[in-house]
Image 1: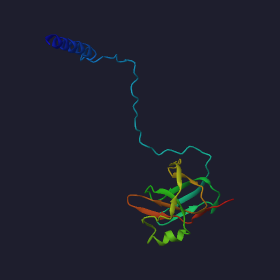
Image 2: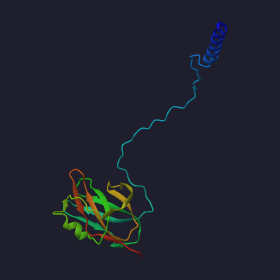
Image 3: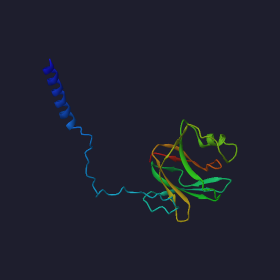
Length: 180
C-alpha cells in the first residue's frame, strides 16, 4: 500500500510540474512596435459666414422680411426639382427659412387663420410636410441662401422665423409644384 501511495504522489508531482510549466506565472512580453502613427487629431473650426460657391441650382425665390410682412418673389408654378431661396432680412434677427408642402386639402389661408398677428409663433400643424434642405450658406452680401428639394406636387409655403424669441412669419404668396 505504501508503494501505491508513493506512486500516486509521484504521478501527481509529475502532472503538477507538466501542468505548471505552461503557466509559469510570467506574462509573455510582446514587442511594442515603435513605428505606429499617431492618432489623427481634429480641430473643430466654428462656422463662419461665407459666400455659397456657384452651383447649377437656380435661385428662383427671394423672400423679404421687413418686420411687418414677409413677401416672396418668384414663380407661382414650377416643375419638380431642386431650387434655392434667398432671404433678405431687414430685421437684423437672422431669421431661418423653412418651406413646407400643404397636405390634406389645406391652404395658406388655413395657416394664416392659426396666427393672431404676423410674426406670432404657433406650433405648425401636422398637415405640413417640410421640404428637404440640401444646402445652406450666405451670398456675398451676407444674405442667407437655402436650397430645397421639391418633388411632390402641390402648394408650398415659405415660413421665416427665429427661436429666441420664437417668431413665425408666413410669406405671401405661396407657390405650386406642378407637372409640366
